[in-house]
Image: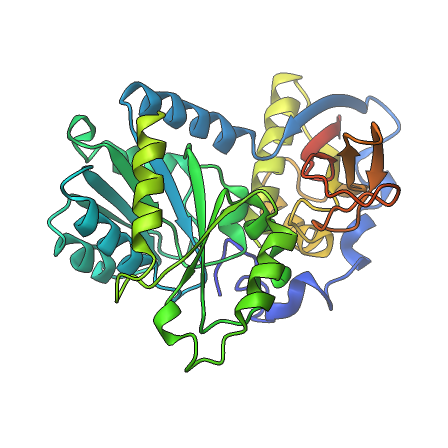
Length: 256
Length: 113
């Protein structure tokens, strides 16, 4: 898939993480090679490997707070309906809150074009091979928006339930989407992402019966992994269930 | 996952530390990786060889210390080990959302000369 994951950079074997490249290379340098014994020293660092991103994310968070923005990081698998969900949210909130969107994809600005039809400001980030947005990309994209004219900034992350889980962008709320056409066990398969979300939204509910969606099972799985998350069930297409979500957003914005 | 960028950051930190100590080579990196950190140690080892190339850390060894995950149970006022995110206290069966350990993704130390 991509260089960031490591899956594209080792001869094309997608399973490098799990197998094949196991433990053999670990101690491949002979100690004699560079005279370990004389003059070598050990320095304790105790630094987080996410420290750089976390620091930039905190800077974003402080900046957004000063601008009185409510910031959402919307994550899901590809095709769960993030763009339609955000577009409908913007259209239906137009009277009450002003939305702006930063949207990330590997390639194309198709999502940005779709979002712009809602008459809202949109900045597209095309990440190339990178499978997630990071805090630095968001800071640069946010600089292209007139934040003083916004109440809510929505960041539509790259469609991926794995990598974006570890990257804080400086958001107030992480919103994870689960569409009824995906398996009910998605939350169990991708627990870090679902666990890290403060809000879980079940989308495409108008297709539930056609997809044979087992609602009770999906909700039980969601609650098992994200027992702290607020859950909404809706269809952005028909508008069913949108009101509760929109009222929730208005309340969240008022609390910023 | 994004093991390549995580390892690149580890090597960057190690090389910076070695340079500012006046060392000429990085001999070994020791990382601390939590059971629920979301990265796969084997993939990190694989990525390590790639990102070390043409740096002061070329040929260095990599040691990964894994940290088991633990949750805090407010009812029992005690920690319990958990294997995943479904954190039910084995004593009182209440669910805990307070992960105390297991998300670590850190560089502990670097050996150089």
